[in-house]
Length: 314
Length: 218
Image 1 (cartoon, rainbow over the protein chains, first blue to last red):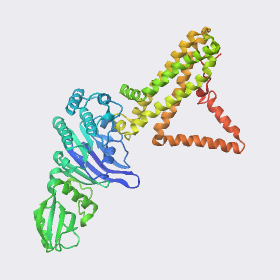
Image 2 (cartoon, rainbow over the protein chains, first blue to last red; image 1 turned 90 degrees about the vertical axis):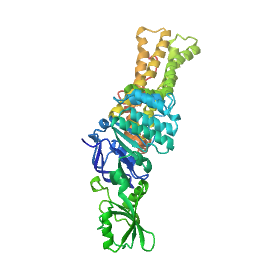
Image 3 (cartoon, helix red, strand yellow; image 1 turned 180 degrees about the vertical axis):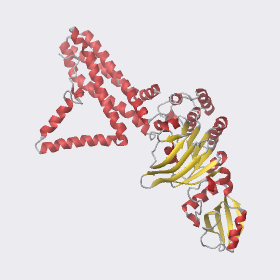
Image 4 (cartoon, rainbow over the protein chains, first blue to last red; image 1 turned 30 degrees about the vertical axis):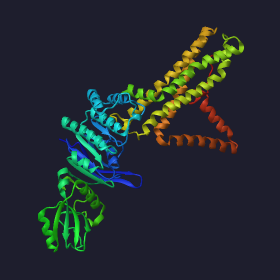
């Protein structure tokens, strides 16, 4: 079975300051893939590229087996998309927006749209321009789900919504995925939200995909070590990836590492250092350490897999 | 699909269409009424013709303005959301633009039709030879051609130049003025006149705008 999304060697540039460089990304079919990254990392640009809204300078993009941007319209017929910003016509009502969308999608499920409209408490004759932010989010999710898509691409779908609404929208999403076995590609900078629903994580920063791994590995793969007596030299020969290291006291350092195994203690003892404590990081801390590692903050060595790490290497 | 595209366009431009359609219907009627009042002989074709002297060109200006707005509106509505909606629809951009164009063009039939009805109504009140009774149809057709030309030019400029369309239009205008001024200074003003004549005289590309906008042309 082919992957739902397969990006290889993608390059794209916007203005002088921002570029996506040599990006490789794979979303398996049936996965809920969380696309994490700080604001301005390039998440929305990547989404626009994979939907064929922008043309890459180099590389290839395949979505549901279709080459994008050449056959983007064929892929889009099977994709439900919720953009970051409202993209509906403000002069139409809720019902008119639903009818407009139905006209373009052969598989649009009007009964489901009606069920979701009632469930979300959206009034038929309300103008889109008069919807609150939460209601707009619900309407966009409704339209995406009622298309019965095989792939849902959601760009910060819950950004700026209150926690109750966020949970409501995510519950609808999870329900749809469980019922229809769809693939989800969800971009967000809300780490805890991703933790609850995703089974794959891709982390993007400054136009680069700095990690891509199963959620389980992400949760357990990054540790903080308290190291006593570490030398300040290179860690390039370490059997793990050092994301960052900080001096805590005169002889004590805190290291954020990826790929740690207890047997790797030996590497420290060879240099007369000692690991005093190994702490699991929560997802948000792991995310921050990954970013720090990729940016080279905190003396991280970015050894081995620091850049655009593939799933095989993690 | 096309019906929905057209529906959105009707939603956005319905007031413009309503105003233009009422104006095109009323222009011949008012011309007849004014002409008739002035000469106290509303059945006189000559009175109605003189009443239409002002109304005719005004009608074309209103039509051109309506065509301009109908061409600009869809692009503006989509541009407000960075064209995300049309680009995320499962059709090619070319097809989407073609549907938008066709929808606007169809809607522009409405003011042309109301002009035809208005003109027919007035002509029915006049004592005319049967051959002259075909003039309302010709007038409505020429009006439709003018609308379509203005609409097509604006639509093409808008969708080809995008956000820069206003700058491109202004650039063309300023370029034209500067060119004619330059030619006038070097004493070759005749070229500008020739170019203008070529544009607006039959069979020039803009000849329809400069037609004789009379209800009855005798």
